[in-house]
Length: 153
Image 1 (cartoon, rainbow, N blue to C red):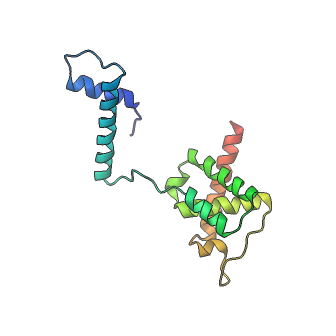
Image 2 (tube, rainbow, N blue to C red):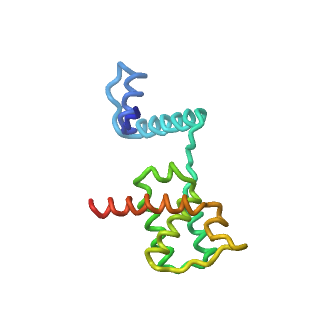
Image 3 (tube, helix red, strand yellow):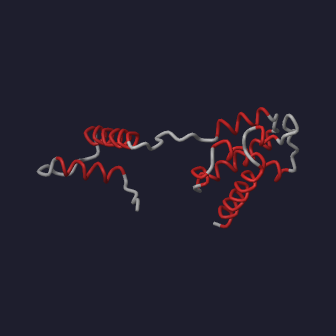
């Protein structure tokens, strides 16, 4: 079970463990240097263990897809808002960035009654981008749940 800790607490424990005879470290230059070293060490450890330190976020894909669809500013704003709302949910960990971006556009177009251009070769536009209709529908339902939870709080 993962327990989140404040960086300040980790730095204080690291300092008091390595320097047990000294008083607690005051916030200042030495604290910030130790903090940076602890964070750097954590990143190196996580990277060695295979964790993705820099996740692939769907923002750039959302913008590229909106541009390629010649989307209106209203559609772009609605899709972006849905994407921002999704950051409070594990949705981004469960689906690819492309699938989330496509689903945000699809749901936003439904909300605004906007028409999206057809795909090429008789395929739907989301299929052209490698996202199935089932995945778009599943993610869209999750996005609706996220928005409804946010409005109820």
